[in-house]
Length: 246
Length: 197
Image 1 (cartoon, chains in turn yellow, purple):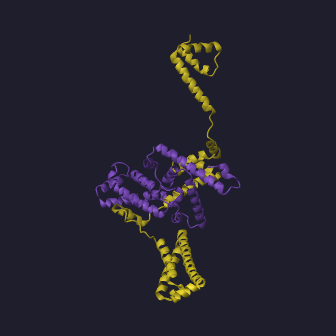
Image 2: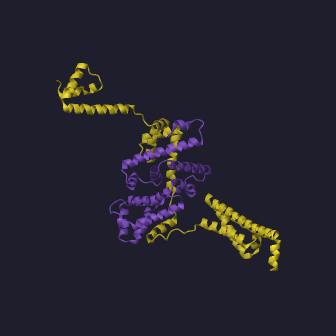
Image 3: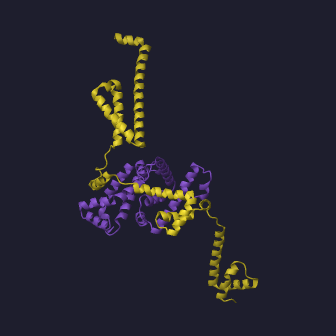
């Protein structure tokens, strides 16, 4: 009968079905009589089965697609090292030479550099230091509710409302006080429009449209009321007469 | 950094001037971190002030001898998470603020400026396509300029994990930008399709 050492050396071949029948029979006989070796062989069988299952396993589709679509993946590894300034000189030279011929790697480099540049250029506004030092005194010493842009827009809306509520802007404009106010507001609005960027212009445009809509609504309301009054008077002349008599 | 720790100690002892010194030293990195999360420059300012209020309020909890900036990052991060639980789609990144872009080097060239603006919008959109955790790592490292060690302490992740995740984040960002570029304009030579990032 085989010794444990001899038998164990043959386990691999037995698992692969490569033992001749007499030798295979001897190993099986040993397994039947040796609990330790039987346990070990069973474990080897399980590992072998797992291996067979793994051999049949396929990598996820997205991984295959990703690797196939990104032959530059290894270059990007170097590129990230370069962004972190942890790249060696020879690798940097290789990378630079690759980027000359690879627009997508160059774009990735430029994107990260751009984010970095914007970060570098992002400075806290000067007044923020004072507010942050004052932060220990409570939350109320924060930034003003109305910013300059908001104040300009509010002034503009107020001007539109004033003209809607008080009357004809042409008549009002003849008043010297109103003229001065109009000039001041116009100057503020013009300055915001000239100096302001996209956001301020959009705000002014919206305020203008909003004012126009309100004006139309008020006009519509007044016209409707006037029409209703006329209709009532025409439809019920008797009632009107009775009312007048009584 | 040792000097910063001494300043913090003085603050804890009630030294008023030390607090001003602490704010002056740490304002820039903390503001940049807030700007990387906040939806507008104005909100970045508010958030920065909130962070300092929290820092002051919890100064007694700071463990002497540990890294103050790492502790400050954690306080800021928790506050940011609380403040911006709303959908990422609803907010535009503060770092797209035109005033910041206009201050970049070589900003006098209008063509260059327009291209940069478009590219930054593309990057911002692509950052929204990857997971928030990964996008945060890119912004912490590449925008706010945190070191790997500071990132590890702020995120409470092991250093190796931070490095590997940042690598993945940058790869996904590059892939996302590439996909969007392909969608926007199919290149005649197919360079992007073949060269893929």
